[in-house]
Length: 99
Image (cartoon, rainbow, N blue to C red; front, side, top):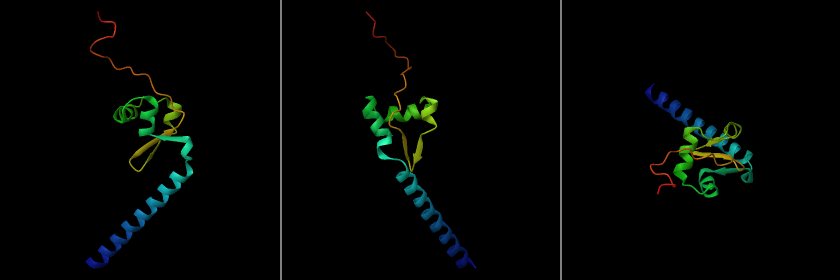
């Protein structure tokens, strides 16, 4: 009985992994490469670091109309290529007008 259960579990995991890979391929192909940008591409476009883009996404600072079009593919976020950079509202220790 234990061998049959292990075989069934193995088969179930195998099918789920195959299904996930098929869905992943469909999502990637459905999105045109020129219509989306990755976190790395957004960092280059906006002139900030990849880590800062990840923080912006995590904090939910992307405009709502673009947020609805963001996808998590595997471990990578992709967003529409026309997503504008949100304003940086962080406070700094020293202002630039300091004399």
